[in-house]
Image 1 (tube, rainbow, N blue to C red):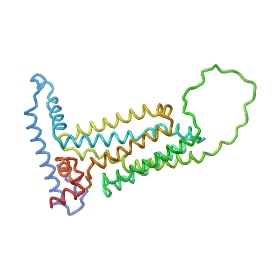
Image 2: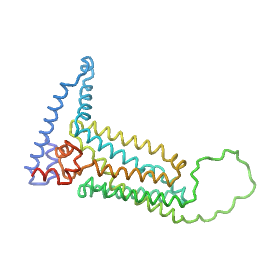
Image 3: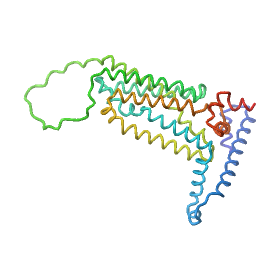
Image 4: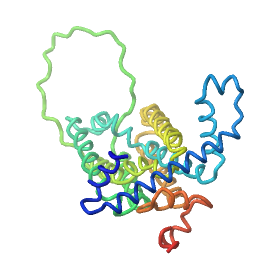
Length: 318
């Protein structure tokens, strides 16, 4: 408790004793209420006695699953968290991170590492900017503003790919090598990238900057959606959704480039982003400036988006 008091004193500054004590009392009260609620739920969880004594954690696990899926506000919080984490991966961002050098080599850049590094630097810079803006603009609003930019960039990327005469075949020749006495030709200067290739680089830079501002940051605020009793379980399931999406995108990107062609691959990611924008608009309420109890109140009787439009929870209660 003393360490928590010292940290809060540093956060709120000198002369903030009353605020620090108020925050500590609120946290202590919330923990006590959560423990009482958990103990009450555990009384109704049926676990065979031999397992209850041998594996006491099984009772808590079953209790957590029951609370997460049977209570409407927790179920809606889990849906939102998994939606955002899945969208973060299925929008195709990590395909660009994993295969950016391959893409730039494919479209004619003689040194694909340089544009790939510029993409990574853009991601780093705009992620730092997002950390400064997320609490000022709001989670919901920053997603509703940044995802359309991603759709525009992916559409430009797909259109530019359609004007590039490239081959995505990954087959290689298996013929045995032969020895030639003909001297190799003198190297010629590498041609400059074409206009469509430069447009693809511009589109990818725009896409990464918008991603870093929104989808790259907001889904990791997932813990604020869950009450303390199911926070670790809900966050774990949402993070598992993120890795499942990462696995799907990493496994499917190169086959999509070969079977659908690059233009249709990026068009598919644009469609996913459009569907994700509709889901954010419909299901994700604004949580900027709300406490944990207020976030739970938003999701108690519905998704909270309609009620949030009329004003924040705190203003309505005032």
